Image (cartoon, rainbow, N blue to C red; front, side):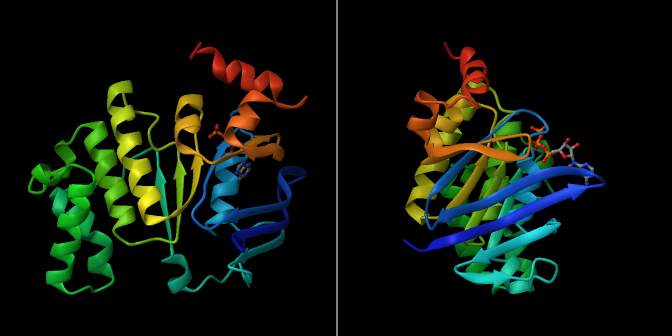
Length: 244
Ligand SMILES: Nc1ncnc2c1ncn2[C@@H]1O[C@H](COP(=O)(O)OP(=O)(O)OP(=O)(O)O)[C@@H](O)[C@H]1O
């Protein structure tokens, strides 16, 4: 299968320190790739490079087999991607307007915006909050707004950097289930960074373990978690402790 995204010989260095070194990485259309690693391993840096928010020191990035000039990404290309972070970005207006924000910027017709926002509010189970000021939402509700705002733009690739880590467990479980069903239905290629083994197990098809700026293991999520290698065993063991 043709990769959606491919990295080749990517390096990111600051001063004398190599922060990231990825000889190669391919992500297939529609897959959910998980990424775990200790603090400072380079996960956010990799996500920023993949979404062209950061220019690597060297190496190449391909999107559907076409090389991207990472320092000059056209707006149409950027609009194929969406990034959702742990901190929710909420505007001081209604939930409806928050979810509609990206479509308005794209000058989508009002009637179509209404149709799409209604659909996505329903998908995320927040239709009843449409008229509420989004600043007054709970953490779980706010993250639903954040995800709806990203998915309404029909992104080809979604980057998630610990989007659920601030949520309590029951809220998280419900949102994970709803979110996974949506991602699978829309076949959105997703890169999902998390410190939570349960989230990773539930959400991802493949898992990459990043340590000291290198991918030390990558494979099917079950395989990586059940058969860690000499580099990843101790980290995976420690990460799994809290669910035993
Ligand atoms: N612009 C920069 N200048 C200097 N150092 C940087 C820069 N960006 C990242 N780093 C360093 O690179 C390393 C990797 O950072 P990164 O944020 O990618 O790690 P991470 O795996 O996402 O960590 P965490 O799990 O704590 O969020 C860290 O040591 C960080 O301090």
